[in-house]
Image 1 (cartoon, rainbow, N blue to C red):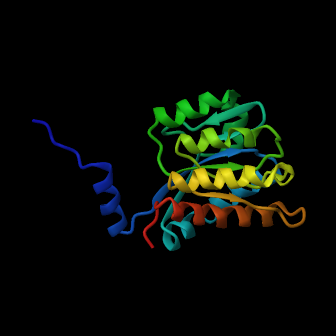
Image 2: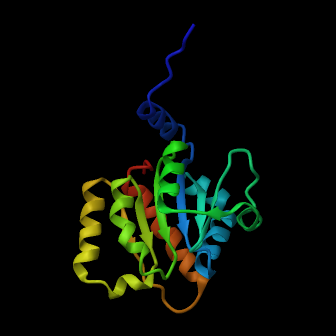
Image 3: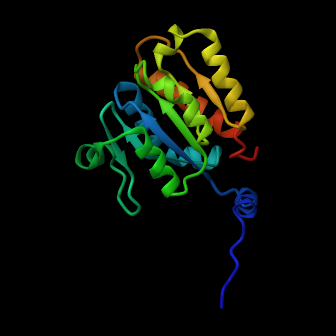
Length: 194
């Protein structure tokens, strides 16, 4: 006997009604000071995020400029040890294949790099269903129409885009600003019922 499972839409509606946290999957580019501080902040505030904001923030993919850690189901999340032990060389299509292969939803790219080449991937990320939160300082040197185009494309896909400029050199402050932006973007892409 087969049981018909509820559609994803119906399941989301039920979860919202019973106040279950909504899982937000962050693909983090950049684990320098700011990226590391963001992970630590999310882990420290995990219970508070679940209770007050109804968010279950996960980092299924964490990258630096040359290698990526892809979360495996059932593996304890000790990100620094996992990254050192399990990170592998990657290409951008590896990230997209992992996300699609694992049916991840509520996707947000966080660009915590200073890479001048990563913003060139933003259009493809949005077309693939990712919202984007960036603190990449190289964006401020691009033409205004670049950011306007990214924002327009994100809006037309029902996704979010935020470019943040870090005030000062405090990684902890930058992590707080990033987390606030992640929550706003998650709300925009209708992941949360307010």
